[in-house]
Image 1 (cartoon, helix red, strand yellow):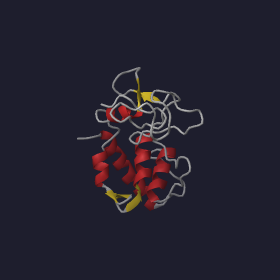
Image 2: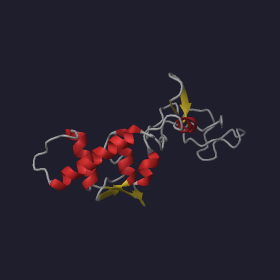
Image 3: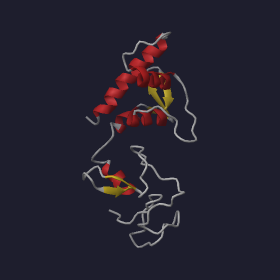
Length: 169
């Protein structure tokens, strides 16, 4: 496994021989610059701390760089991504008769938060509206002025959420 990783951007060193990151210019092992935007794990969406590291998923109390953290997800998956990919149609996910942006739905399944994140617009469609309603009122919530399509979408999302959370079979 690569031992030298830039703590600001997560770029690994070439065979461990580099002294400076070729992407951002920071010396390997140095904490990220105060003004830099910190990288996030593409698997669990957690952003590294000011020291450029994340808590280890393997060893309690240990902190690891972003590359090691991503490798640890092989043994500690966040959900059943292979199954979720089977529902993907291009950049959309198909749930029952509805579709929604795949990245938005996966981010919600992993983090439990329906938000667009910085500098992104959230697409509001039946699936995202259903996720928002589940987040606010729960899966069995009684919504004033509820429409049948929203209720059906919530039911489809709840089934998908439960299946994804079970993980790999």
